[in-house]
Image (cartoon, rainbow, N blue to C red; front, side, top):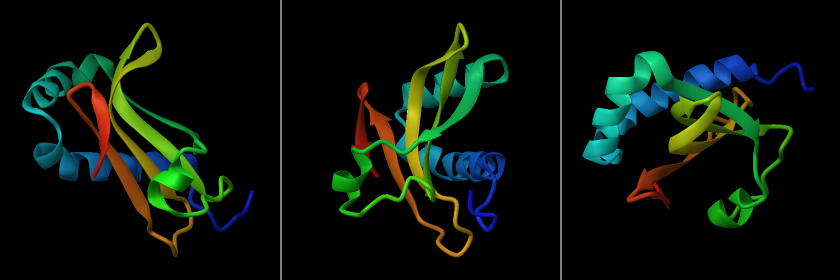
Length: 111
């Protein structure tokens, strides 16, 4: 792995900051209330390998060595069962790129 990339934990921290900054304007009210009520016991974030679907979605060649997907939502039985946001984040500190898909009416829309 490239030593110049930020850590997965730092990327997760960045994702949570972005989520909290933007959730008020982008999450549906019911999801905001549910997340706020259950965050202490069930709130979670997870970093996974960037899926192939991101490239065509954002019209960019996604380097999986640099980009990761972060999902934030509620966990149930150790599984992220209700995802409120999916983010494609660059781990390159010089390339602060982020693409976001917000949950809307049970599905994801680009935001």
